[in-house]
Image (tube, rainbow, N blue to C red):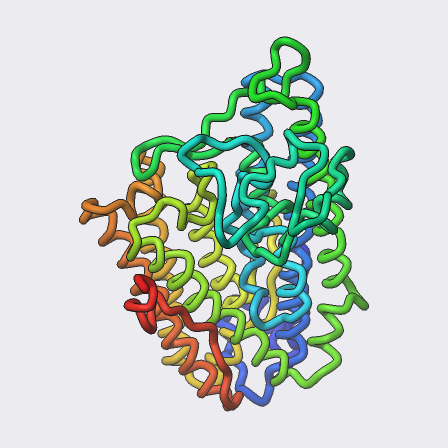
Amino acid sequence: MRNSHPIRTGLLAALFAGAAMPALAADELDRSAIVDNYADIALAEYTDSLELARDLDAKIDALVEDPSEDTLQAAKDAWLAARVPYQQTEAYRFGNAIVDDWEGRVNAWPLDEGLIDYVDASYGTESDANTAYTANVIANPSFELNGETVDASSITPALLQDTLQEAGGVEANVATGYHAIEFLLWGQDLNGTDAGAGDRPATDFATGDDCTGDNCERRAEYLQAASDLLISDLEEMVANWEEGGEARTTLTDGAPEDAFRTILTGLGSLSYGELAGERMKLGLLLHDPEEEHDCFSDNTHYSHFYDVKGIQNVYLGSYEGPDGETTSGPSLSDLVKANEPALDEEMRTKLDETVAAMQAIVDAAEDGESYDQQIGEGNEEGNARVQAAIDALIAQTRTIERVIASLDLGSIELEGSDSLDNPNAVFQ
């Protein structure tokens, strides 16, 4: 175990004698230990994300050094692996301001990929909302942005982060993070709601006459710069959750009840407004393959699944990393159980039901029906499968709201979504 908080001394004899450990009363629970364990899980998840980002970086370097279908596939596999722990960290969004202020640098979506590289003619040539819609930084060492000339002759992490990210104040100008890297590895997914992900050739990173797509050296520079920046951003967040880090001390220096408000705001908002609403219901309403989180790689089924696992991790106070190592300790579940055992059982059941509903989406994708196909118009069975997961997320959010009331934490505002609360607005 990475972390296991000590069991109260008075209970050790019963444990070693094989007797069942009695449930602690609410006033016996060390509430600060629950907050500490929440921070420990964050640290473990971000640390695993950083370690796998470093592995991804090594695979990207190998691809650039020797472009081939094998080295490209190895980089893709490393990207997919890196998403597993990172998506579980999203349960720390919405409540923790320091995470929200940072998150857009690493996981913003959707992105207007024409900012970065070449795109298919079907993408179009301009957008009223985005003057950098087809800037194609890789092809253009300089370009005009809102009347000013941008010097992109040297593609560096600083250029990506300080100049291109949200260039012109447009959120769709995503130049950094997992999804910029994903686009560069897979290319556009031009299959709509038919089978197939992006299909970028390895020769897009080749040199000399073997180069396809033009500007291969600059494409490689962009990919490496984005990878370097992802590592530095994750290093920053790991430091925030270490002992003495800002994210940790913001929680642990205050009252545990304030931390519980933060924790439950994150769980409820990710469950309802973000995941059930913006990431799932919106795409289902529009039957739009562009409204899937990992749209270039067709990995959305796993992104959604691990978001749900992240919520479950926080409530149960336990996280298992890619290496099988576990971080665990006192949890919200322990606290709720001490107050209202039936409510804790309900919450656990709702979490299990949501995981099962997401697992059905994963199973279908693994059997060849990707997430964008499942939300496609006319796919009644796939639509129903996605709607069942949305319904499970909504139901678990209602139980989260009862948990908030049970712990007497006052009014907590959870993220909403027009897709759920006002669907007609989606079509206006």
